[in-house]
Length: 312
Image (cartoon, rainbow, N blue to C red; front, side):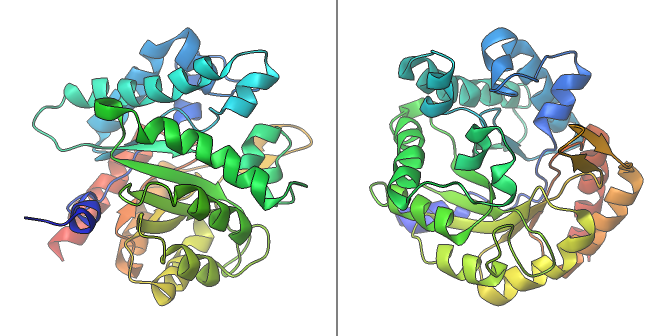
């Protein structure tokens, strides 16, 4: 009989393709995501659109779905005058909607990862891209513990794993590790956002961050997301040097966010993204997907690259 640790590690076996951007595809479907809860607003107002996005990525070849819960937290809901019950319900609803989409593909094994954004995402000021929050470790632990507890005790509505995303610093990753300590049998991945080929947004070396989180018993994969595609090959190398955990990468489309003008600039070519994903698999990435501004066509080409990689 497999041990709990073996069962954790088996969750990602045989899957190579993650989905793409949730918010950009919701926008394409006409959803309004410009409020403080971002795509979480759609969980409340138009859940069928969330299911439609998940379905589109599954049709494109995704094998892992990240839920529409990146921005969901009691803290964020409280700022809008919404109570903790509403926030906790949104976390569980996000998982349910991903499961509903996966059920439309009964012949496929679909992994559902609960998207859990960093503390900075709730601040609405871009702090997740530098990690200078102005709060202590205790606040970070409690922020993450609240969401972990809801999902850990969701029973049949629980996700397959917790996807901690866009982490800017070693401090926040270590706080998550302390928050997770109460639930050693959970599975989680840790994905950092990077500012160059070696360092996460706050300045620590990615390799040091990866080495630290690899020690958590819950960690089943480590990676990078919400980062420029050009940086990914070198970052994969840093991750592989730091641990033997599976590497997951899901960069942005290649477009850049202009914080002052609050708009995206540049272009993101799906064909180029697809060609790059061949290189990412060759460099040692186990799982590849897309983050901001990527769409089903990007993931369709990633799925093709995954098939090519598997045949080599």
